[in-house]
Amino acid sequence: MDIPTRAEIEAAAQFLLGSTDVRPRIAVVLGSGLGALAEQVTGGIDLLASRIPGWPVSTVEGHAGRVHLGLLEGHPVIVQQGRVHFYEGYSMPRIGFPIRVMQQMGVEVLIATNAAGAVNPDYQPGELMLIRDHLNLLGMAGESPLRGPNLDKFGPRFPDMTEAYDRELLELARRVAAESGLHLREGVYVCLAGPSFETPADLRFLRMVGVDAVGMSTVPEVTVARQGGTRVLGISGISNKANLDGGPPTSHAEVLQAGQVIGPRLMALIQGVLRRL
Image (cartoon, one colour):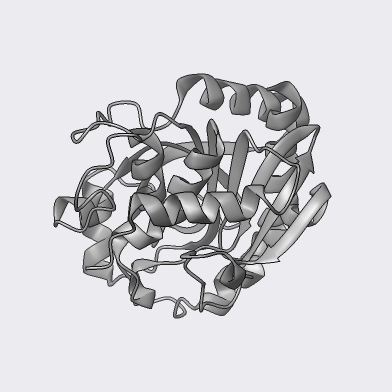
């Protein structure tokens, strides 16, 4: 299994820190079709992910594979424009590598976003959902980003996940949404392996166990972040409805199209949160 070493993490962090004077304290990971926020980062650098030692490179449309370091609403940030997924063939520890590098650079807050399908029948495409908690089915099955030798520098062997998503950041996002007139859902997100979308039986099971939205990312990154003590705000953009009744087939094109609606709302929420941090 591909398990990044501490030396790899340090090398990537030094490469990024040596490329700019920006010292990020906040990280933002942008999901499928949600990359527009990266264009708002100023006063820094924009790098292809392939230039960063050890950094996994996305092969999926809607994930630009770029890393931005600069200022956003006055905060020094690192923005990952496009992520990688388990279905692309990467190991879970390698998927967590960017978060480890960000922690090595001094990041204290992670804002993780994704495009997700609505399992909750009340949720509609184009809406935003704050992630209150997640269901880690891949981790339960043994595919954990923490697998392998523990790097004690970053956190304990057995990290607590009782509060994966920071309560203060959740409350801050709620206030921003209320003040801005943004309609905001809240719920439980589940990460599945993909790349196939879910069967009706899959979706009935997920609904039965309390899932509100389903996707193929985010949970590995949040797990690594929390082990290292990084505070997390998670936001799903609802890109499509669960296909339980033989409706039109779900497609990645549909997800990307929904991102055009979700993007401005997501930007308004994140920028509002940053202004109040």
